[in-house]
Amino acid sequence: MTKLEAVAKAITELSADDLAKLRAYIDDLEDRAFDAKLENDSKAGKLDALIAKASAAHTSGDAEDL
Image (cartoon, rainbow, N blue to C red; front, top):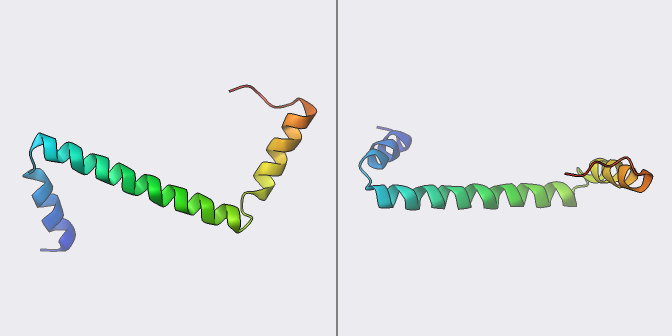
């Protein structure tokens, strides 16, 4: 049995309360990974073109309200 299979089996045995806690933990884990990727991409300049485009649209009045 692989680790993933063991984890999947263990998940099916969790109580509703523990399953909710696991969901919250995984959500937090994904949020932190997303934030780290965004931070790294920003530091690497990967967002510069998007920022420039958004800034230009705002300055020219072409930006749309959300």
